[in-house]
Length: 165
Image (cartoon, rainbow, N blue to C red; front, side, top):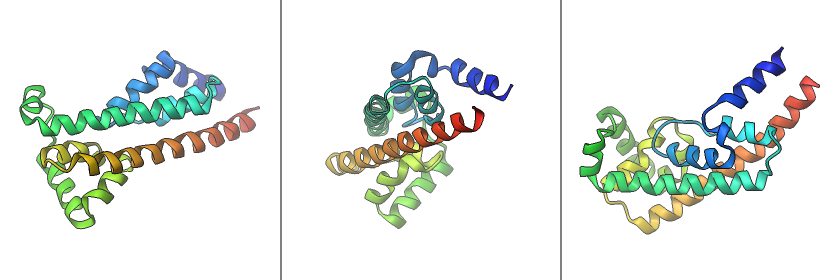
């Protein structure tokens, strides 16, 4: 019964239905909307998709999403049209964290910070943070997170299969 529930959840989730393309869009959207990619990665690993393909897809999607978020912040008029401006308390918290620990550190670690991390790239764009530095720290942070998600996902799936068989 537990196996059926797990398969149902992994099979019916929106991004999972579309395989690597779904993971790509999950990675893009998760850069500025708090949508976790771990479930999609786990489901694709369970489905037998090559971990390296999953890593590449997740990394490229996440990086593109990071640039979209930066651009949304950079072009504030677009943000207002979309009405997706970050809540003031989260924006202030993001700026406070960036001031305390340094922009580069926060941008690097932002993929790991729930909710606040999702708006770091938007705030960086709003504050016109140097795009070269942003690119270096954002791509490094998102790549490290993708490696961790796929690595631990592979081991978690192996453990899960071992437990239920």
